[in-house]
Image (tube, rainbow, N blue to C red):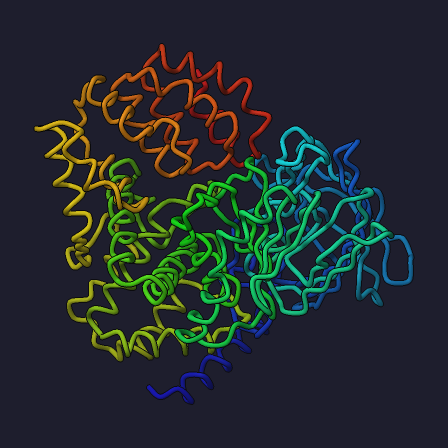
Length: 622
């Protein structure tokens, strides 16, 4: 089937379905391009009948009360004849609602849901084109992390940041909190003296005397990508369109670590087309940030754990940059389709890293990813091992596993190997261009894949097994790394001849080789052997969080006590869930270690974001 008839048929079908849309129980929703999407079951809004298209925020950041106060003005477009607008909220206090003429509108709360929050129903008048919701956040607002000055690097000012993905935006903005819509937004944010506000939008680069900052995001994004950070911040340019925000005491080390950001943008554009967001900046947040990075458009939020001093962990920046195409430009329509964001991004990230640092380097990243994937598969229920998920009744964060990231990556790598890199690159470039500023479901992607790359030739590709079945199909690509082979040989030498015989070999190891070496130490390694490694390489005090995490895990298993005091410092300081979760899980396996972990956690919990402490609460509960 040629492209033209396909598009005409799709448009006619869409128009037919739009005419039949009825109530909030509709099975379909409509996005900015009038395409039909499956309704997102993680929103209680009526976005299939009336769709928010623009948001303007006017908020004051109050550190003394730890709350945001002000209003959100929402412009909308009706998809059906309705005079009711339903928004997602969670733990917000609504004061009043007005239309564009400052006339008060009736509103009420609908039935609350423990997972999804409390929908806000607003009765519109016939002339209403915009609503202004006056509100404030509360101590329970899950998206907000309020840090005292002691929890920052500079210790002079407090700090606040938001984390919207996956369904947390509704806890700081009353909005239709679904990736199935796209909005533009603007904001006016008032902050205390001496502090700078930055957002996923056009940003200031220094403080002003008014303490009020204006922001514009003119490209449409999904609501989970609206983001705000406020603190004592400095800015330093990398090149004409990239730069770094960080606390003043960290700005030099951060800018030195991320010096290749501009080159990454250049290489990404060579691969898959123009960067459509004007600037690409990064803000390095305090240690409580629960993720490695968050791909907020124009301004990646990043963990300080990537500032290792040797640029060894900058693949995370390549990953968040790649989201500027996969995730931000083309967005999963529902959280069941999360792999469309992350699997594509991991594939894109590794192509950027290969262009900059070579195939050997990228093969190490891919092999570490494969190891993490196979390990996680063994611990997941079968339903959670599929690319296309069914998350009814579950939090979307339950989908944030290596299935979406690494299984998604290996699916795309399999297609590359079967169809050739040149065809794959052409396909992906067209995919991003054809779907830019749109949302997409798994089924729509598969139809596009079949028409534009496979052309009906699916034999041996095992597409359905990859997408809809658990585990890894038999045609999963095999990754080899000569540098990892040498690291495995070093494990054998160490076990047979002692640590002195691997000192020379380890002298030039990258972070990735150290990770591979430690992961391949035997389960029955004894305390004396770990002690020798620690004395020689000072592993318990390593400055690299990735290495520390795997070292602490094997130390727990071997009951190597000298690692526990450094581990306590690590767990108290670092809030990144990727590191916290496996360490606490391993500690919880033995009663004595679980008791110790609870004591550490009691002091550390206030340093964690909701995303992290909500996970750890579940691990350590009796």
